[in-house]
Image 1 (cartoon, rainbow, N blue to C red):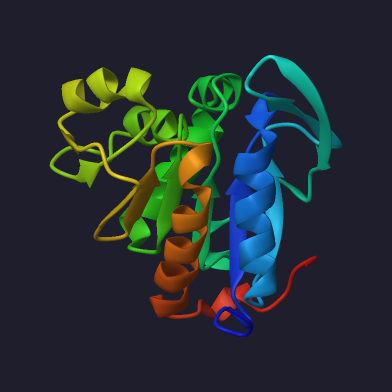
Image 2 (image 1 turned 90 degrees about the vertical axis):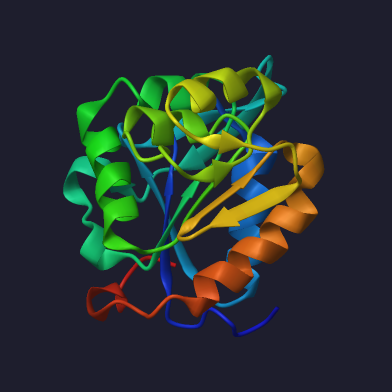
Length: 192
């Protein structure tokens, strides 16, 4: 996978409660493919990670506050899960607006497990074919999505996946999808 994403910048929108493997493994796959990744959050400093929503799993450093970030600066967006993480993000208008703007831009957006909750809040799932953790499927259907039970689903610029068990397929797909997107003019700089 080396080199497919050289020069591309990816925003990883997350906050406290993020499922560690759902941020760490996709980020590693993106970094290995040459992307520069930024953890973008609603709080500065560090965010608290979890294993299986219940166990402490260390922290991740925050690179940017979402209110100071622009979709013009990034080529793609990753929304990891964990139950608490997207539940907090969907309550923050600046985070929801960032996600809505990303989807509207046509740039690729990928969400795994509970990550699609933020897509629901942004009002961008209607008429889209998606998958997620089983407990979110009713929310997705109620928001107008066509919900399927598959490892990874790509519909236009949205890629979704069900759970940490699907991470190998998810990581492979997001590298492929993110590599197809044109590189943004403003995505040249960054911390990684």
